[in-house]
Image (cartoon, rainbow, N blue to C red):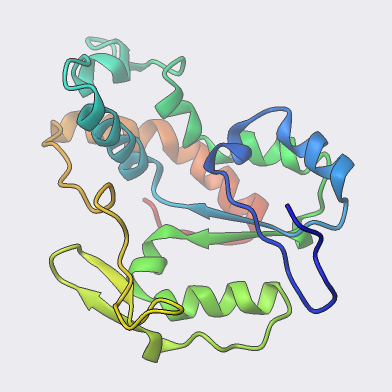
Length: 203
């Protein structure tokens, strides 16, 4: 990566950093002053989305229900499934807080990125110490995608929407399974709300 010049901000994005045990120590060793932005969404929706993504690449995978439970009768959730583990945000955050203060971490709501993209990006701009340039006028809602799109990508006259891997239709999951997952994640969500000082409203 080229060196950052004065007046520039270098950004790098890798979704797995937040859940990779070694990442906080490595990033801290590189730069203790790094600002961290983490986009989170309802862990139940997230795990279904994760499954949908895998299913699109490997249609022969087991059912969502069989991957979710260690024992379907008792309703015991299989926490060895990585898709389940990712949504235990409080556990991952504890790891990061050993190396970074909360003041250097911004949690962005995935739900609000859809309902109020300019508002969430306003928070990001404030966090990075940038002038608020991106506003409501930069977005329009794409009904087909179910997501907001940027009215114009930089250097192009065409609007920029998320790629074809985003906004896929989720499979129908048994409401009982969804309910059991909600119960499983609830205590972790509550702990995460306390740690971040922000109620994401996932319950």
